[in-house]
Amino acid sequence: MSQHESGALWGGRFAEALHPLIHDFTNSLPFDRRLVRYDLVGSLAHARMLYEQDILSGEDSTAILTGLSDVLREIETGELVVGDVKGEDEDVHAWIERTLANRIGDPAGRVHTARSRNDQTSVALRLYTREALIALVGLTHDLAMVWLVQAESHVASWLPGYTHLQRGQPVSLAHHLLAHVWALVADARRLQQAHDEAGVSPLGAAALAGSSFPVDPARSAELLGFAAVFPNSIHAVADRDYVAQAAFAAALLMVHLSRWADEVVLWTSSEFGFARLSDTVSQGSSIMPQKKNPEAAELIRGKAGRTIGHVSGLLALMKGLPFAYNSDLQEDKEALFDALDTAGASLGAAAIVADGLEYRTDRMREALHGGMLAATELADYLVRRGTPFRTAHEQVGHAVREAESRGCELDALPLDTIMACCPAAADDVVHVLDPERAAPAHDSTGGPAPTRVEEQLESARAAVAQCRVWARDCEPPPIYVAHREGRLLEESIP
Image (cartoon, rainbow, N blue to C red; front, top):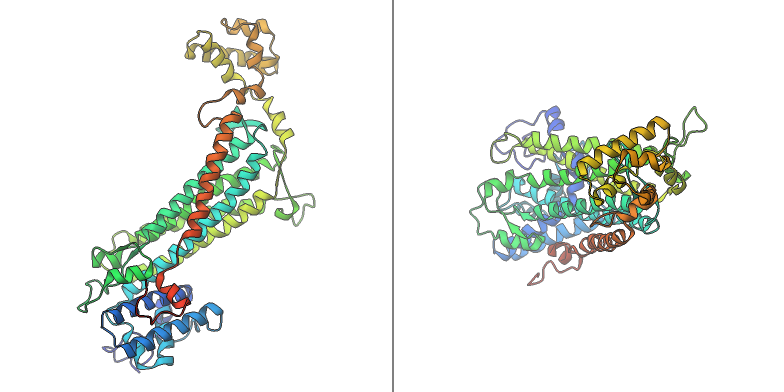
């Protein structure tokens, strides 16, 4: 039996069947089966374009469009599932064409006119990537909203701010939570940019050299909701930059979630005690009955590593590949799928964990009175009284050393001792030594003073709302809308 007779989309020049182990090794159906909806949408757009260009007859077009639409509808309702991954089909594209042929006969063999699996695969993957990125932007909104609501309740809840994991200067809990919100907003914008980068249609590039048929790539792009058409047919089928960019956006998002998750682990420890985990987001030990572990946060932290690895793997995959298409690019999908899946699952878990945190503002306040948190305020005070900053820095260092030798904080030093270390100090110096007064005094742009935090909250709410609006307003491809509304055979599809 020839390879064509065995069900492959190719094989006329082969007299013998493919070795079963090679079939299994090269078979991508186990993972690319998740592209079935997107491949069907891409095929609908291609078939409709062929019809409009008079490349397919009306009779064949009717059979193909109706058949593809029926398959897509049954896939979406669950009436039809992609077949046995160990069967004869080497990928989801072959499965679709065979399924269509079983239903409509010979016209199914014309759906591939003026198309290669090279541009076909990229179309499906681009559609999948764009939809997954839209979902991720929606999930960033949900997590950011949890942090925003918590921040609104803690504008005047003070705690140490840290550098090098050492206590530095006082900030508010709201200010700290907003730092995570702004990182997430930046992630959402990167996801949106990656979505836009994936919005270039490769349909019409065929294998690498376009087509001798009078195809209309601009019309295919329009039907698929893509903003642009490929400028070069070789680049169109070889390009996987959009895959790397989407994976990178997901990986950097995971890096930011990992930093927050690490904080959850630290803050819920006995040593910090800045937060408690509710029972709904905690897990226990198989041997130590007292344990209440932040395992979800630890897993988020750990999963960041695998998404970073996917970016590295994709870049290594693309490096040095000759133009145009090579089967190496089959390896792009599992990395991308897992990166986007991991980011989505982690965002969902993070929102639940964040909502299950109870902040212990009493412990935070206690921590303010340790670590000489008023040192910078004292230096600034001296500068305002005419001392050069570098001199003030050195003088306050002497005061800190004196306080350490006595085992006390700066505000517990006798006034005469402070004045001996800092000659420009006066009686009112005691007012700058209270850490709880320090943060409200930091009224510069983006600072922790309550008025500035309220400004941040307002702008953060607007930025987070934009994520929701963007995700909500992303339109499905026009060809998909036509399928859903039964308009695939109408004279005009907008």
